[in-house]
Length: 216
Image (cartoon, rainbow, N blue to C red; front, side, top):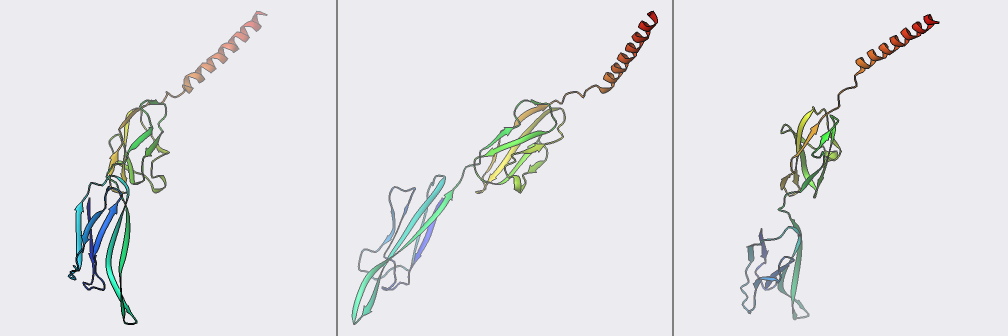
């Protein structure tokens, strides 16, 4: 990561930079960018600093301090002093892809054509979608940004698979493992054969009733 800044002054003894330094939470020691240790009045008007750091992921802060002399006159007396300006910059480094876990469906057989898709993501995401059976990419709605509770409807009998994708707020993209599952709805209840059997029972019962009456 490149860290750069400019410190400027008017180049006069009343408003000029004599020292610029900074401290950062990822550095063990402070860094002195510029320091005027002599009485030479030729101060620079712009101080530029640029350096590359390997900053770990997470929340960070850096404190930049600039110091310069000043003076004022009161009752024919010149008073000298030093002024210090401090700036604190807070920022976040995120270079890691989001981790996505599919809780449902699981690698098993479901006896329904409608299977719930439940997903967890370890950080906030700006974009979430899923792909079912390698086909269309389905974007999550704004009200359901993690896909939790989404229903995969109208699934045919047979094998299926689903993969979930997410992009975090820093633009890092990630994908879940692909989950494979099977749908096998039970055969419909045989209404016609059962109805025919019921009629047959009634006919047999009626025949037996007639038979026993005649024997009497």
